[in-house]
Image 1 (cartoon, rainbow, N blue to C red):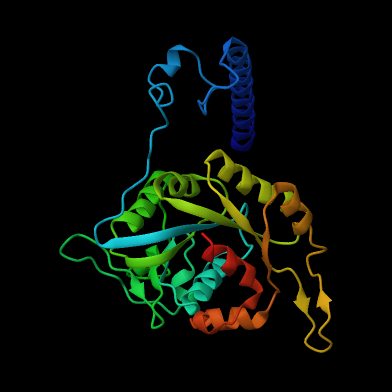
Image 2 (cartoon, helix red, strand yellow; image 1 turned 30 degrees about the vertical axis):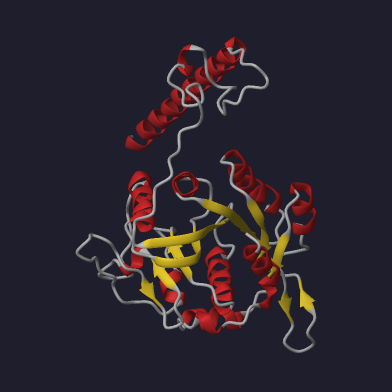
Length: 318
């Protein structure tokens, strides 16, 4: 009896929500017909506002409002590089760490801001387990590996690194901004921001609040790659963020016996997509079990990853 009641109730809710959604679509469609903005308007919302709603618009008052958060006086960060992906499970944190290590081995001062708040993996990859503490100025000091790479991550603030982070989006976004301006980073040539997958609160916060020089999009060789890459690319375009290029992870598996490249996830489409978007392919990484074993031991710096040589060249030209 209760099951029937619940099912009927659920169906009623779905119908109600569907009706509301249809009404919203009709309203938006009707309002679009009312809007008559000049074609050369510099307003980024030219297609979604009316004359009355434009009165308080930053674009109407001389230009877009900046949401950039200033660095503190104990930080001197020259370049900020975001590492993003349209979906999870493509090895984004691996690429972030690889880029950081490659630049550190070139002699640059490097840091990693782990913005994947609910799924942090950066500290473990570098063998970082000690808690970081605040100082008398109320600032955090990043964990520094023996090779000099500075790390900040929510796992370095937890009493138990295996405890889950159960926070809503606005809280997570606030923590990311604190990692940026309430951490005494010191001198950093390249700060890599490892972002969670998708195009949600954290990427939006990073793009708006940090002076991002460009992003690297990470993907894998699957049929979904077209949609995945374009979602990340289109978000960057909408936020006026430069796309430095794309990296394909899990591109192939090299047979340990004969050296033949085996396409575990099918043929790669990354070259044609990169050409369509006019961005370079920065590297194609193999599926190498030795990489995972080294990362699990917390000795990521020892990995020699020459598959990202082109990415290193692009970063040095920024």
